[in-house]
Image (cartoon, rainbow, N blue to C red; front, side, top):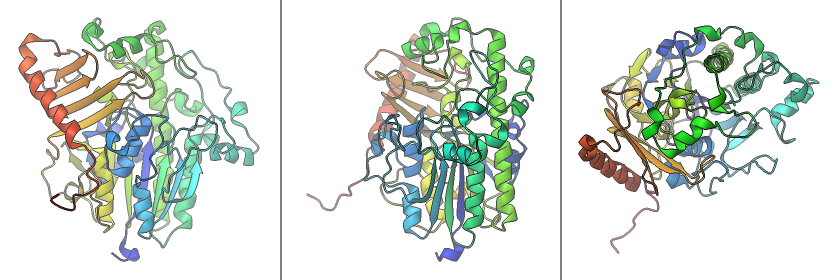
Length: 474
């Protein structure tokens, strides 16, 4: 495919945004007119699942089209091996100019320096893992300095033990990410490009700008989904996280929360989602005004979800509830993809990389394990089915360093196996879609449990690395 026919790719990826945070998809409490517009103009996959419920392994997975165990980037703080190949590198090798603003998070940055990069293909790299000025390489910190501001002086709004009035919209990291994206779009017109907008929001701490926080009345927010006593037969990790949402800055003691605190956190989280939507609108308007609307694929998604108090848990961890692993996913390409189209079939984020390469006319490497969604984007496939199951993994990452879990979800059931323990979860999603009743030890469900454990084991085996190829019989 000649460069003039290759579509641009605008990849909008938020951090820790649940699937149920968009008005057009059923949440009447949040205001998201710009994402709603993308949904009306594109294809929305209503049951898209990440391959890990924490950042680094999920991002490594969807940027390579491979599973966490295959990339060997299985944990937060674990560096991407240099022989892995990101889709940004493949695109760059095929004539694309690639850029990024915000997170990459494919390596540790605990030494207070910019995270180690492999040959990732990004020629424009505005790196800011998170807004806090922990290191001078934070491009967002440098941007604030250019405006005569510091994060410390701006981050002084009132708050509680659970949320805070954040930095004004004008100086917010999400706003900065949008401005870097708009600059790139305008500067690279006329040649194929791919840009990764990777804001930190709505990741905790829950700290939206004042003007957005004031839009959401906590009294109108629902309480999290939780049944008294439901944790009695849930895994140990969940019982621990019900007491603490991780004892480090920005997190909080869950058991001390009042109902009003919970409603206020939900309000703050949705306010952060609306701020993201505002900046998405700015980006889409700039794209359209630049005359690049029709030759640009736009993706809106998140890397994983947020428990937000459901099942008595906040934030993330070795948890595979829908709130943690199901994410928003909408893709628009005017004139090419079917507008206002919903696909209910199960899909994985591994499917994005091969899809984009196929759309760009680039051969999909054998090492990629995802499957192209192109027929669904064209509207040429049954929207109710794509995969028989989705698979997700957690390996000794972030919190609970002794936690190893794998999840397999079919159309009607879900099993979670915590390896090296007696813990597990089994849900009948037809009769218990909110995953309250764990059937792992139910005498009446042992045959189903054994069947799904076999499927989960098979999935773990079949996600082995396809490379190197077999070249001979012996």
